[in-house]
Length: 325
Image 1 (spheres, one colour):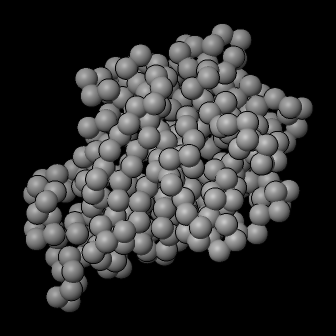
Image 2 (cartoon, rainbow, N blue to C red):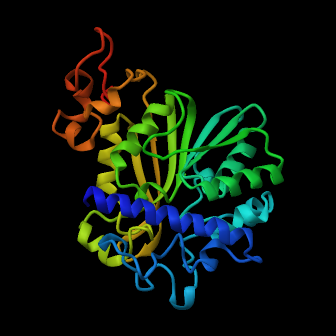
C-alpha cells in the first residue's frame, strides 16, 4: 500500500466511524452497523481505493443485515444492561476484550480505538474506583459520543483521549493492560501500533486484544478477495504475522486464539502477550529511529538475542530501541 493509499484508507475509516457515531445519536434504537449499512463491517461501494472496495456481502448480508461476528451481539445481556444504550448501539467490534483481559481492582487500562466507549466503560467497572480506564480514538464524533456515554453511566474513573493508535497520547509505562476491539487490522502501520502497546505498558503489563486474524495459508491477495480494508478483512494479519510482530515489539508469551469464523479462513481472535517484568523504558526518540519496525528487527537477530544486538545505547544505558529488550 502506498502512502497515498494508506492516507485514503485512514480517511475512509475516520469518515465511516464518524457516520456511525452520528447515526447512533439519532438511531431510534438501531445499531451503528444497521444505520450506516455496515459501517464497521462493510466498505461503501463507491470506495476509491483498491484495498477499500465493497466486500460483496461477505461481512454484511444483502439489505444491510449485520453479520453476527460483529457488534453488540458479542456482549452478554448482563454486560449490555450495565451501560447506556448508545454505548451498546455504537459497538462495531469483533469480540469482547474485557471478557479475556482478566482485569483486576486498581489496574489502569487503555483501550485502543475506543469508539463509543463500551469497552472502556466495562473496564472501568471491572477495575473499580481505585483503577482507571483510558480510551484513545482518532474520530472526534466517536469521542463526543463516548464522553456522553460516560456521563450517562456516571463513570468517574475514565478518560477519552484524541489520538491515533500509532501514536498514543500517554507516557511510557503508564498502564497495566492494553485492550483493543477489531481496530489493529485497520491500521496501515501495525508495527507502530504493537510498539506503542509495548511502550505504554508498565513492565509486567499485558495485552488482551480482539481482532480479525487470517489463517497462515492466506496471502494478502486472498484476504483482500474476502472483504474490504475498512471492513476489517483485507488489512488483517495472519496468526504467524501477529505472533512475529508481538515478539519483534518485545512481548513474550504471545498467543492468538481463534474464536469464531468471520469469512472463510479468517476469524475473530483473542490475542494475548506480556511485557517482560525487566523491560526498560525506551529512551526518548528511540521509536523514530527506525529500529522499531518489524522488518528492521527481523533482520537484526533472533528475538531471544535482541537485547544484545539491536540498536545503539543511550549513554551506556539500556538499548535505545523499541521492543529489543
